[in-house]
Length: 335
Figure 1 (cartoon, rainbow, N blue to C red):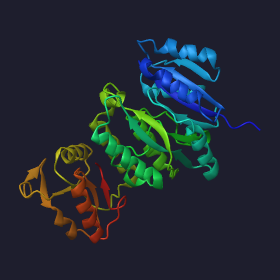
Figure 2 (figure 1 turned 90 degrees about the horizontal axis):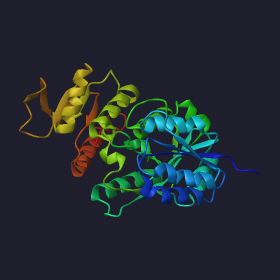
Figure 3 (figure 1 turned 90 degrees about the vertical axis):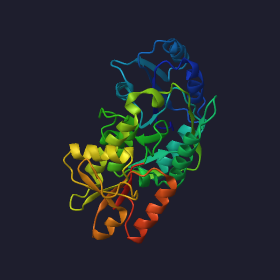
Figure 4 (figure 1 turned 60 degrees about the vertical axis):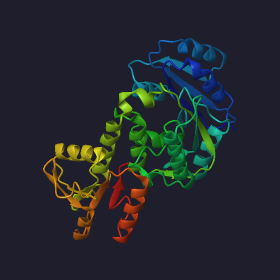
């Protein structure tokens, strides 16, 4: 009996240096019933010719040129050409361990519809991995091991863009790649969350994530910090904001100020607190800064926490716990 078909979607642009490793890792999968829809997003190097040589040798590899430009258009085209019962993404500069497709598929088979399969990731780089990327890897993997990814969704993208698999029917139910909202991987993760698709816990490394100076996530304006704040606020206001409760921003650093300005532009009232005595009592954007103990005067509230320091975040969590407040209901870490 033939295994279900898995569609692997890969956009690429000027990644000739890494494409052979990527393609070989797909070809060497222990799960063999796959098709690769790979889209050239207006490359100016030899990437297209390289992929074309692979496609001539393996009819599971289907090469197309992007009809527009950008990763979302490329992904839309790839999905429109796909026929698989299951959908997964891959980046053209990364590497799949040979068990990746089989493990993701088996986990979905075990848990059924309305689930997302993902796996642990491991960064690698010829220049070495920065402390920030290593901490992100550890944080992301700690969530995936327990399947608690959504618990910190407002901090950062909690499902790695090139390491997930979903049933085609479920993917269509959340409108696939149709929303043109960047960062596209974070938007997709929020739509998984909105649909209440459960994340399947996994303790296996299923993706080798390459880091280098010209990677799109480092250089493309669509992945700049402001884009992340925009998408966080968009989905917070849509999915978790309770208009019956006062909204309170905790923190008056750059991120707190950016959030405040965006809320003002949206005509959404808020209160503002911090623990900096130099700012308490002053007005920023005509909003008075109050001490964090102000929360104790409010019977009910929701707080967006913009404090990035990890030690301070631990103290803040302890404080909320004393107030009997719950994460993802009463307070939300935005960094």
